[in-house]
Image 1 (cartoon, rainbow, N blue to C red):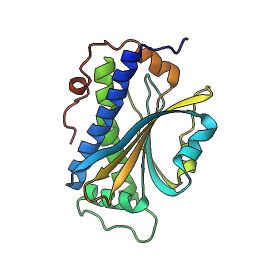
Image 2: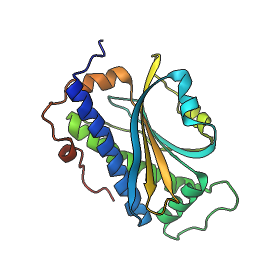
Image 3: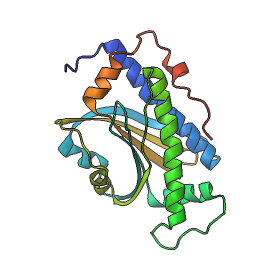
Image 4: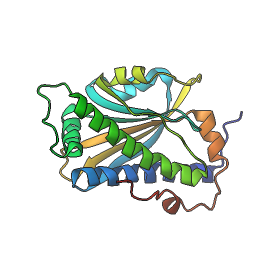
Amino acid sequence: MGLQVDVRKLDLFNQMAKEGSGTVADNLGQLTGLNASVHTSQINFLDIADVKTHIGTEKRVGIFVELNEPPYGYVLFMLDPADSKRLAGAMMGGMGDPSEGSGFSDMEQSAMQEIGNIMTSAFIDGWANVLDTTIDMGTPNFVFGPASGIVDKMGGWPESELVFVIDSQITVEDGDLGMTVYTFPELESLVALIQNIDADTDVAVDTNAGDVL
């Protein structure tokens, strides 16, 4: 299929990506009790071979969720391990002691998976509203290790030379905690959805999927 898109609709999608990232920031703020905001949000077209270079090799916690309906692909939340422990502790509400060392207890991993579930639901529900569709998602997966290796764990890459990446950095007000959201939709499926967007859509209204916490 052709990959040409009306430039007005591409701009709407860009707004949609930023609004979705803003929703994730709002939910991160609710989890931490601190104001969170989108520091940067950008769209990249990368060769599949360059995706790992883009993400880097530092040790990270990754929570990834597969999208089971168009635009398919994955949503990946990546955090510094120390930030992940802080978030897990906030989610657990004092119900469990933090694990010793650099590893993560089963309870901490479950807490991070639930955070991934909350964040992805907020992000994807807003997209679905704008695109006038439903987007079913899988179970969040917890991975701890080099960032590039987390990409390998995701697997299931589309058979294309280019990968469409939405990269949003989100930080809380004290600057000591943040996460990066990577969205990897399948390019052809995404274009098919974008082509059906009403050019008069009010993205800010439609992406407001309501509070999920």
